[in-house]
Length: 393
Image 1 (cartoon, rainbow, N blue to C red):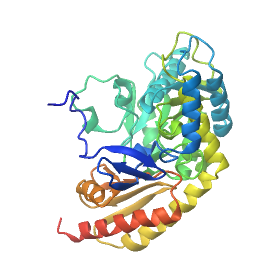
Image 2: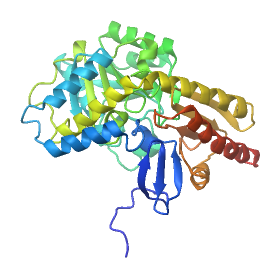
Image 3: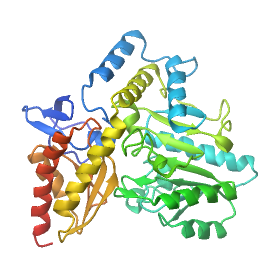
């Protein structure tokens, strides 16, 4: 019987029936080391007892009531995110794309309240903010945009990690109201920004009265060894978006605001039926509690440093390996040629990875990954890359 599923995904020929820790098992009971975490989502791995307990207990109480009513768990989660981030106000969504849509709406309303008719947001090349029409317009991937025009106006794309590019764009557009950036690009190839660049960008936004929007959808929630990747630069955004790891596997997004961005949205300006429901907020609180109580931020930093050091040692000098980069357990290995076939080869060897930007092997393992499991991961991956780059391109 043919599948009724729409063919929008080029799925790999494997289905998983259970998971435990950093491991997944398929229908034939073959075991795989999960080096991808469901694209950075399953930060506590699979079947973590604290997360299972929180979800099952909340499901037995109440799953959904809607935002027509007060949701105490949502209020508790907002307080936790505010404490972690240093921002003052939080609203919820169901995904990273929805969170980024919310951030764009905040920036546009901010501009309109200042009398700007076409509020414009500066975004970066190679960026990724989502696949909705609005976030697609903000995203720096022409391939992703192809066939979906006309996209909304109000975005200017500039070179990533280049402060002069931001300044020059603003010379030609007096309607700029915000800069939107990932301080560590994920889909763009695990590309970190310079700390000094982020600090100078913060100063520039202050001088121009622009909002600084930082997309932490992939890099946030401990992934880089701090709660948020921008904390390595010791800056505060005006708007910040979260998703992926926040729920540990259930769908949740969040937008945090402060200063000039706080208080802009009033009743009627924005809304969501499912966003910030009791079940997902219970899960997110369990994730944050566990990351903190188990010291998983520092753990991710140390394990990631060791992994990167071994990759540098064993792959860094190879012809065909262009660069190894990243922070914490968000690591990219850029090769000199398309390397998508490594995904299947790794899977056949019991390791789950993926490739982004055609040439970058991306690692996003669960933050609970032990040093021994990290070595197991690299024992599989390094020989595969060595063999691959040894072939004639």
